[in-house]
Length: 552
Image (cartoon, rainbow, N blue to C red; front, side):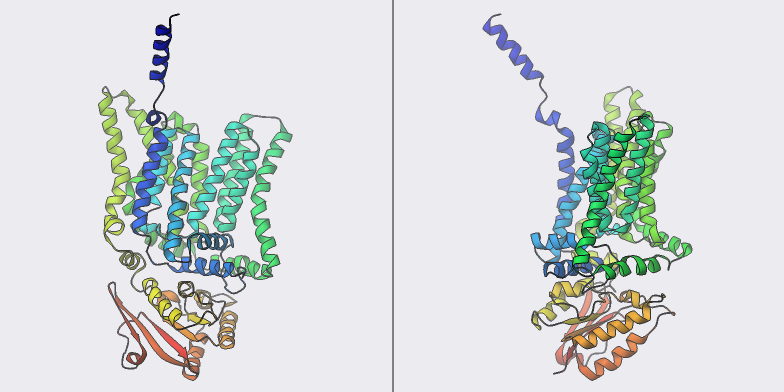
């Protein structure tokens, strides 16, 4: 063969190789989606912290000082989220912007994992659609998507664990099951609700084994053992850490004994009312994705490809739905737990639609229908929430979503004043449920009760909790005390014991002088008064905070 002919054959071979864009178009597409979502989030990094974020950030701050969870601050959350926040603060810095930057990166990683999950279960198109759906749903301010609640990290670990489980089943690589268990275990240590994703993963693994009809019981037992071992290890390590810190008993009380009382306080009727309130805005804003998800859930009835994975799709959806519904509280940020399943189902629905229109006579007509469906489903939520996502300032978004009567924006100014007028060793007390003030001011609390909700609830521990908080404040003699006279910071009912209010009135008269008033009048107007101006001012609203300084 001549050199000239060989060269021609080589050129032909080179020409038939797919280009980088042709080869990696799914990854490039999902990367573009991630960048678009990240740009939207980047503009809103400065949104003030809400209460849960304030709690996690303060606990993370204490961890960086060597103080274990539940030692100087009480709550019923599992400790994983506190360690996550400690890591975030150590890497990015101790500001609310740093916390939201970490959320941006976490969200980007989760979008990519959901893309991989859809790709491994079905194909690249469903992967891209699923990642896009999650990116848009988890961005929704009505699901508190701009705030770094624990659900974002639960989803990151849970989806990662489920993805490794699927890859292990496809490749028969047993070690992937161990790492799948590790991620699922981390998800559980972040929030109790993740137990549903663990049960789903174990159930799906057993179902797949039975479906394949394998009789190698020893191999099955080994693989299941690896999965369960991985799940147990994170919880075991956390328990050992808490035991070394001497807080294991407190952990048990707050996360099991008190938590069981908390979850039993709300009836099904009250839960349904909460569901109606929380779902109204989020459902309207993201309606096309919800409709597509419903079609995706039903698509096995007419689509063979969807039918092949119907057990996974239905099981994952039910696990997400039950995790979202535990306790019937239906918080706005609980919807994040539903978002991966809804995103996957919406992707399945669109892919099913594409297969249904394969009989269209013209290729351009198919492409047109596809582009129209995708544009409507995924651009409508951005359009419906355009003011919040593209026009409002971070503070205005906070006021809009949480109502102006929640002092999240105002906490920044209060904390700034406290930090300027105290030393690092001074203690402060916030009598109310605003732990973000402790974090912003970088001052330690005079009491372990960083929330006051549990003091107002109807359970056997409420009165003793009030007495304990009173004793701790009196013993610490905080230099500054902030009283939050806002209903949403207490949620007092007709059954609430009012001992703490009676004590506070006499305690302030004896030991403190009134030096600050923060009067929240409406969405765009808050009055900050300090020093002598306080004496001549009478609050004009029912939503205000008072700052007191201890007399020398």
